[in-house]
Image: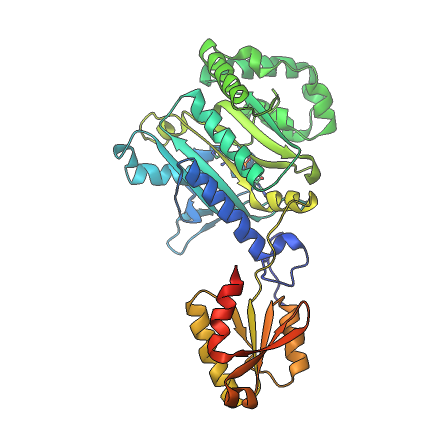
Length: 427
Ligand code: HAM
């Protein structure tokens, strides 16, 4: 076919995918584990549009961030309004929170979301232009325990998914005063090396110097080895907050590494920031990340409420699970495959399948069955447990020839017992 999917996007298929992480039943599995965990931690689902007014992301994610400057899908709609596909979920959740005045409903709000996000990334492994995040945002609590709770939830989701060997990296980017102090300290340190910085880092030097810490350029990395740590610029309050988050993580037995180079790619962070990485993923090894963003809601003209959250990438989680041979559910398969031979049998099987399905049994009918052998092959390919062969003779006798596909054993079962038989076998 001449029209193909847009570059750096992919389809999620029920079967026939070129790589196993693109199989839809695995996505359903992950999503249901995320939903259960979110529920256990008291987070309720929020769904926002996949596009917003561009202005929201400029103000919410930050004009100077790479995401807004280089990676947004932005276009004018037919009414000449600038629209952007959401590059992440936090700004949209805050917009919805403010628009619906949810702050009046209670004092602490805990939301989760799962859905596609869009970033115009350069083609590279582990980065897609449409990717899928699961994320949470907790609004209203400035308690360090709220930070620890979100970190624990991301950790717990990874644990429930069977991921192993993960690393939790935490850091504090402090409050506005700490960041201003650090910004100056970092610029002072980098100034003598300015000419040797990469072009990207030179651009960031004035606009967003903290992002230089994230540079992947080998020359920049070498220069940064001697850079001061942001942790030395923390205000006493930000330091106390970070110490308490660490104590709480210790208390609940979550191992972490302090990594003072983590600043994250979005401008809204304050105090705690964190990432969970998996070494099996190669260069793009972050499964998820997040942090506190106490000033964001106020900057969107809302009440001055603290907030903290994270987002994880479903593609990366699934790729890591496959790389680690984590336990995965089998592809859903019919319990019973009905193989009718002839018009009357087809009608009877159709009715039988309907009755069985109404009782919650996964039944497939071969509406085009001609030969037993071909039908059995299809049943085996679908991984069905039983195949019931029903021809005109069976209809006359009220029986089915029931084959257990794994053993090839065959038995006669009365047609009116077939569904009950399946229900008994379902467990
Ligand atoms: P982020 O670190 O930009 O944070 O994205 C979170 C996760 O999304 C990453 O760790 C990665 O797994 C996945 N991800 C990001 N970009 C791509 C891509 N192009 N392809 C595949 N996966 C990707 C945020 O988006 C923040 N909104 C998280 C947050 C929520 N902070 C506070 N609340």
